[in-house]
Length: 283
Image (cartoon, rainbow, N blue to C red; front, side, top):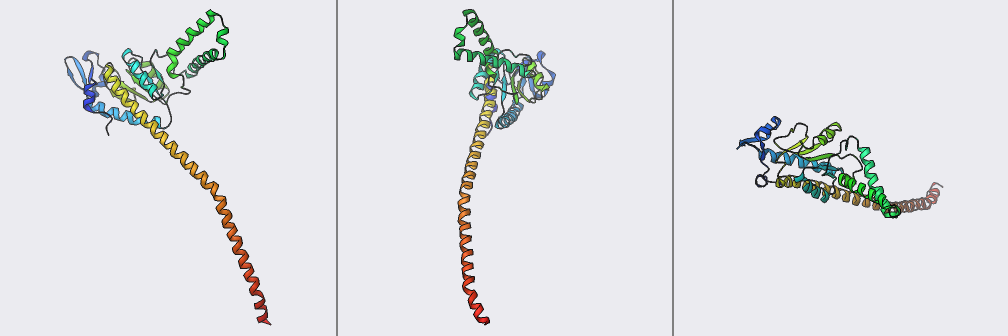
């Protein structure tokens, strides 16, 4: 079953591109026509590309890896943050810090610092500090939460990035490129799709368009998570069945060994009974 329809894309305004004078020639393959000085995106290609992206991202999540959502533009940040939280995926909706991927070890230190501040408040140390020190720590905690709160549970580099507006998130794209991390992105007519592994030609400014495309990706992630859970449950059941079979095996073996001993004893007794008769015949 298709994840979306041509009509859904049309209703969300996914087909509206930028002014023709702002276009990137590398997007020409995804442009259907020009109307009133605005480029119109070919929705047939959008349908195809969004299906391709959703299928690929589903497999990544199914393997147990994380997808980092990046959307720092005003009209996208709240939508993306809400969707990402729903499937427990990391996200960046404030400023992208340079080196967030290429210098991930340093970023992890900042995240650890945030958790250490939380420990101070829990163990009572925080209340023993002066008012000025508490205020400074509190401000630092808020700053760290704003910038890194969405990736607090990210213990290693993400397996993929999903971006809204590759032109705005060009630093994230270049870092992913250096580290060979696959990128999925909504690409408008003013952007360069050549550095994106799974470009989705779409209007990246309208909230309806952003919500629709991101929602499709989120559904694919949910499918991947569900399949992973089912596979794990099946594996657990198989292991339990194998353990049970192994536990029952010695009893069966003992019975068979007991039967074998009984049969051996019967044969021996029979041989001993027949032996004297054979001897008397020979005499």
